[in-house]
Length: 136
Image (cartoon, rainbow, N blue to C red; front, side):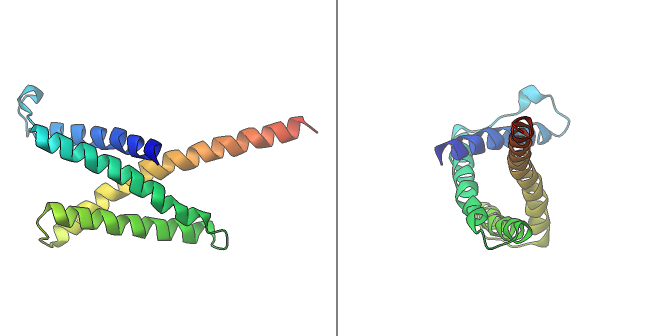
C-alpha cells in the first residue's frame, strides 16, 4: 500500500509540474509559483490517490469476473472517486466542463497507472512462458 502511495506521489508530482508549466500562459517558467500549502496538499492527495488505486485494484481479485468486467468496474469506481475529488476542489460546483476535464485527466492517469501495471504483468508472463519453454 505504501509503495502504491509513493508511486501516486511520483505520478502526482509529474502531473503537478506539467500543470504548473502549462499555467504560465506564455510567461517564462521561472515566473511559475506555487504556495507551500498547495504543494503539501498535492503531495498528500497524490499519496492518497495512489493508495486508493491500490485498494481499488482488489477488484481484480474477483476470480469469477472476466478481466473486461474487472477493468470496467475498476475504471468507474476510480473515476467516481476522481470526480468527487474534482468536485471538492471546485467547491462542489457542478459543470459539464468540469466533468469532461476530470474525465480526460482521469483517462490519462488511468492509462499511465494501469498501462504500466499491465505492461509489467505482460513482461512477467512472457518471462515465465520462456522459462517453461526452455525447461521442456
